[in-house]
Image (cartoon, rainbow, N blue to C red; front, side, top):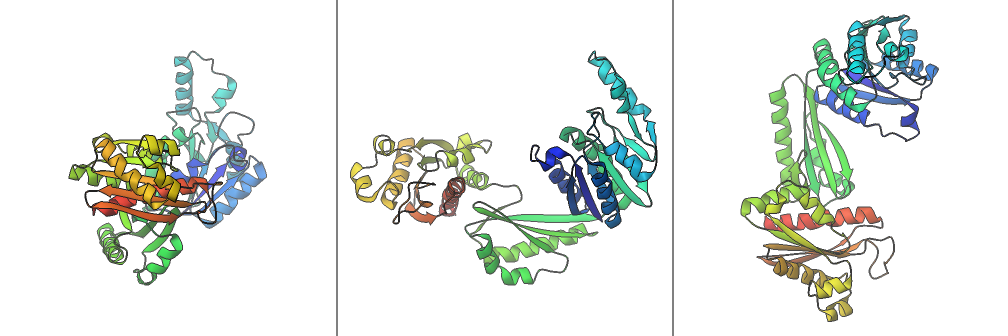
Length: 411
């Protein structure tokens, strides 16, 4: 069952407002078994809005419309729906009562403009809005459904969950959707694709695969649609089992897990602790770790050794070592990890020293160079990384690589 989403509003097209509604609606529809086949964003222009309605309903049986239901002159959706469906307006008494009560409780005067917000097209059923003044609208015409919802996110979400989505499921019986997301670190999208090419080619019919990359991580999403949920779950789990045999060290988690959360659970379960010494990442590793609830049990703290003085005076890195090898080097990273571990009395110490950019690089040590070290009961390891020339991505990738090195050291 395909669904199209039509978003209305100049503010979306000029970049003034981020269109989070479309992403959220698509997620809810997908989880409910629908297939979002297209998203369209159009301006507050009557003819363009009408064209969008016509085009969307010519392709699909379900259209979700957001925005343009407010009381101002640029809110054209109600009028456009009347023109499109060839009908006039009617007052929804339930909506008028809610609006009147809301204004009365706040001591506001109910103006004619506010009363008009209770009007809906005659061919629609009102979808109650318990969090605002503009009701939604449900059209069931020619065996096709169009749902119009306000653009205010918290109003839209409540109306979608409470009314619109349950009615869509009851009306169309879209079936089940099963998906599982595999979280991968340590290889880019193209390298991963080459590594799992034969596995991907042999996926069973109806099982789709999507690559969802972000700095330092690739998410692989397997998805199936149908009416036998248990069977689809077993098929996807079997395929993930095959994938684990191909890249066992690169898979660190599933679904909404984070690398910091996975590492934190390992530390918690083992009764171990960690500390960090960060130079170029400036506390990014500490932020990732402490974003996990309960991390105070296993995370003791950090030394942000951004300058050489701090590396020398707080972490005890020998000045001769920095002179001989430079701050961004294997010996310095090892010394930072070992010394922060000793200083904060933790099971593990993590250290990062690198050149985040965009300046500061050289031929020998380019922007993106990072030395990362982990010191622990087994000894000290260090690895060299070249992440690229974008400062923000370098910091994120370095922090994730450091956490993954700790994960691998604990395995």
